[in-house]
Amino acid sequence: MTKNDVPAGDFIREIIEDDLRTDKHGGRVATRFPPEPNGYLHIGHAKSVCLNFGIAAQYGGTCNLRLDDTDPSGESLEYVESIINDVHWLGFDWGNRLFYASDYFEHLYQFAVELIKAGKAYVCSLNAEEIRGYRGTLTEPGKESPYRTRSIEENLDLFARMRAGEFEDGAHVLRAKIDMASPNVVMRDPIIYRIKRVPHYRTAAEWVIYPMYDFAHCLSDSLEKITHSICTLEFENNRPLYDWFVGELIARDRPRQIEFARLNVSYTVLSKRRLIQLVEQSYVTGWDDPRMPTVAGMRRRGYTPEAIRAFCAKIGVAKNDNLVDIALLESCVRDDLNERAPRVMGVLRPLKVIIDNYPEGQVEEFECANHPQNPAMGTRKVPFSRVLYIEQDDFAENPPRKYKRLAPGKEVRLRSAYVIRYQDMVKDEQTGEITALHCTYDPETRNGPPPDGRKVDGVIHWVSADHAVPVEVRLYDRLFQVPDPAASGDDFIRHLNPHSLETLVSCPVEPSLQDVPPGSPYQFERLGYFCRDSEGAPSDPPVFNRIVSLRDSWAKIAGKGGK
Image (tube, rainbow, N blue to C red; front, side, top):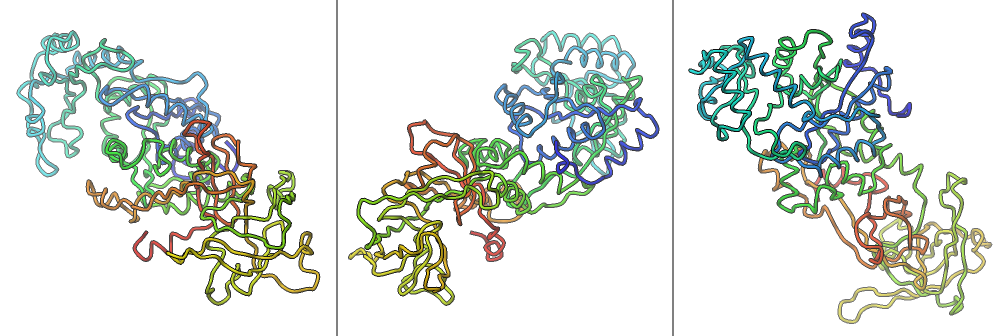
């Protein structure tokens, strides 16, 4: 973690600093990042990763990585491995403190037995629908289960038999005995254990009962001697239950739950259920699709961990939910890539240029700076020949006023090369499309401006046709057309942006990009930041993903209803 990754003070740090002043927890600071392994991490998780590991580093404490794997349905080793990889990639290390809630299954079972022996838990034989009916509403108290008065001995016997696998799924649950009239519905005898005959990816068929998240989470924190259990606001109503379990079962070093506002980012969704829907229904190509807000997707697209950490530091920690403009994330990516990405030339929509007065067969090499503001990044040689490619947009047959690119009667400078002047064009006879331009070059302009003092307004990029490497380019844009697609609930799919991916084939780029490794970022001059994709065989044409444009043009587009 760098100095730039540490945000300004916030209410969580104020709580921790107060605890340190009063020597609470013996001056220790211990946090944890506890994702459920039922999906890939996304940018919201990245905020929590940065917060928990950042606080631990700032105050000389520790941060555990724990997989809260208490529900075998949907959990898998794939998700575990992706989480471990993503947290490492973001720049954080947990040392030897990688834990799993499943490590504690026997401890948690014995905690449940303690509650039964204390008369604080009972086996309930109502079915799920009946339990919901007995729970009451926000304005009406619940009703006590007819099984609430079972004896301690009967509850211990039934719970042991639940563990032994004597009952079918749904036959019984273990519930905490708290208060069915509590104004907080969460406290109305919540379920602690349920029967679930689903093999666990770590414990296989060893267990047929599994603890509920609210029970396992706080006690896992306690077993790990966590001091500050930092979570998002949706758990605020569950804090009394967190404190009840800890208060009943933990004698000392009790963790404190602190809630902060979850991250909501415009033009995307961060609900894991909705992300799973995007993947399973093939609206995207997978969890690492570069349009996804997952860490894997952002990494494949070309975002850097430094940019993501800078974004998390800038948005800080709030007490109330808000919608963060994705333009801020993109700005952090631009700022980071501007410093680290070498400059190269590539053409996305090529238009052939033939320089009539350039000698046929002649090839020159121009020394081009890899980064104009950073000489330490060195230079590269770029070949130049009689036939070039330029962008279609860099020529206009009928240019608008103040047009500063190539047009009839105009000349432009080719980046790091010569000044060329338009002479003629070739059109397709059937479509009228311009297929080639004929130009002349001024050989006196190789090392500077025209010697006669005439002004050349525009500078455009180019690629030598004889030396070009054909690549596939994927232009990624925002996945949704509206700022808050989640506001539409389950109907969010209708807001998908049909233009979120445009694929261009056979785009000519300079030969220096032939064998660059996957993930390498570059600025294609005047076009944006791109990186070599990690997918595909080495023999395939290289694929480059657009990471982000050079500037945010979406604000103007979005103001007209999106793309």
